[in-house]
Amino acid sequence: MQAPKIEYFKSLDSTNQQLKEMATERSIAEFTSVVADYQTAGRGRQGTRWESTEGLNLTFSFLIKPYFIDINNQFEITQLITLSILDVLKPFGNEFRIKWPNDIYSGDKKLAGILIENNLKGRQISSSIIGIGLNLNQVTFSPDIPNPISLCQISGKTHDRDTVMKDILNSFIKRYSEFATIQDPIQLFDEYYANLYRNRGMHSYRDENGVFKASFHSVKPDGHLILRLPDGSLREYAFKEVEFVI
Image 1 (cartoon, rainbow, N blue to C red):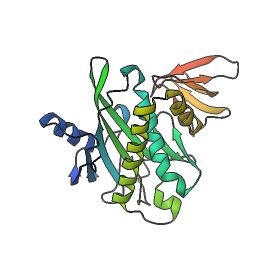
Image 2 (cartoon, helix red, strand yellow):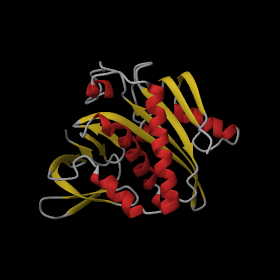
Image 3 (cartoon, one colour):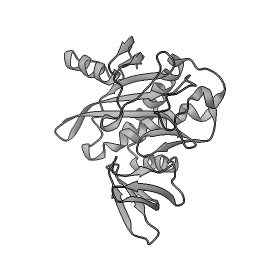
Image 4 (cartoon, helix red, strand yellow):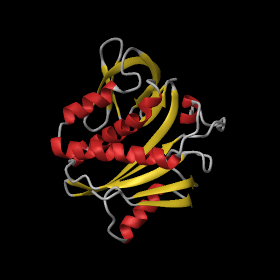
């Protein structure tokens, strides 16, 4: 396979948006990537904002064509990319976890966020754009950001953005290609679940009715989280319907 094409920009509204526009204008190869020194309108899931100081962190997006993943199993893409990022991070420590559904945490602090936008055609996902924002070398954050941390703060050294980006992309390509061949969703889910933040014990959460205690019961194939309350009853949540109290 040829090396993925990577396009670099000084500043963009959003790497996801730039890649979407490129894909609309012409046919682009799988794993084509867009990297920006700075995003003026970086987004997380459901419109949440990703804030990053220019030149210090990693903001990039890449395109895939996951024809082999049924639309009912879109969450497999989330599992693949989060585990790929952990592959790259784990040499720097053992505290990295996936905060459901797709944030990357070190301890109780947020290191990275992911935005996946799928383009559906019939029963297939014709293309997906995966956007990643990773706090790399920033050490001072706005007080408006509740719990950020960077890889520099964790490791005690600065990191080359291009190297980390290519490491993540290569890790994803390896996992993605193996999954396309083997198609073992149970093994993929088990690895994802084993790396989830708060996947053991009782913790505090908040929904529209207030704060409550619960433990993880499972994550459904569509990505919905099922929590078990102390009385044994279960509650199911889509993203943004429940908040982790940290």
